[in-house]
Image (tube, rainbow, N blue to C red; front, side):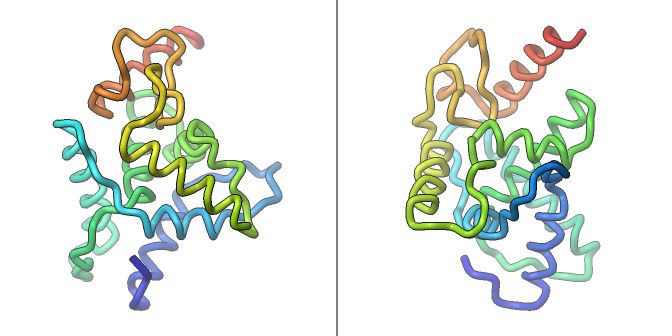
Length: 174
């Protein structure tokens, strides 16, 4: 889903401004963010429609009623930003930093510009793994990998994956 209007570009810029790339990191990620925004997020587990609604709410927040967002599907980038906000609320911290942490969990922090064919293939494989939940039992390959999963994370609603992840983090840092 290519950006078409000036407002689409402004919205995209607003989204990526909510990702805090660490200062020590000299790389840019424009290509990655574009690919994530072009990739539709599909949900296969009941309850994940709530995360899609969180992403729709971003559009409303951005527009403040002044922009009618195109009726295009929700992107993986929008899901990332919406999840980073929820994770920051549950775990404390800044949502911008959580957005980067979630990218690190997906190993997409290695997909800096310029994007070679190999990097594009890796991004696409990662996003496909995320969307179709072909990641590992413990959530590795998804947003919320766990050290000690209580159940198969490929079958668990993202909300509950996030909460299990938060509990593990809190155990590490009481």
